[in-house]
Length: 255
Image (cartoon, rainbow, N blue to C red):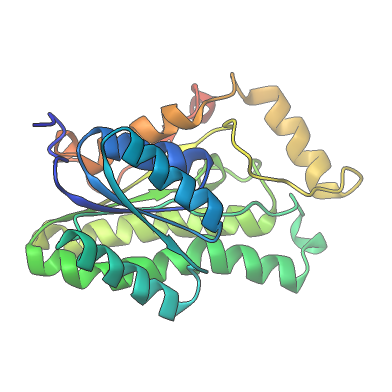
């Protein structure tokens, strides 16, 4: 029996094809949880499932655009059908903006970042809640960001999306704590993943953010370090932790 209390629990991890999402899915499986690995990248999601299976764990893959309500409903239904329960939702999937300052941010950049980083987690959480409420317990973990804690870690769209995640976490914690639901977030600092930043180095936003990040960050983190924090927040070891946003950043938030 896992000391985290995750043995046999049903878990959805989004953005599980690579990076923090894959590391988180693998860590849950190591703790004995059954994992649905959701991502737009089919090959990557299937590789995560293959790794879990090779290590003796249980996992299934789900592929689709998680900002689409029909896809969201299908993913939640697949998890419940596969595991008979849904105990944990990890809203990890996300994209970067172009580090654009507000005046440089076009409609397409704004709408895409907000849709994927904030609306998709909202849709997934709304779809998962009825199953958790029926069980009288559940844990929801979000991947926020250092950009959810400060104004100089990313562009306007990404910063707004991650501040939105922080607000969503706190509201969920207050609204559903009496029904046994916990909501928390990790706020990663710079982490070695394959997430791409298509920034124009000559634009105002990247120039300002680049100087601030370069002056204040510590070392580069690993996906496994972020995963360890996310799994802790989901586990029984964090049973009295609710509404927290945990910086996982080598002290950057303390600067």
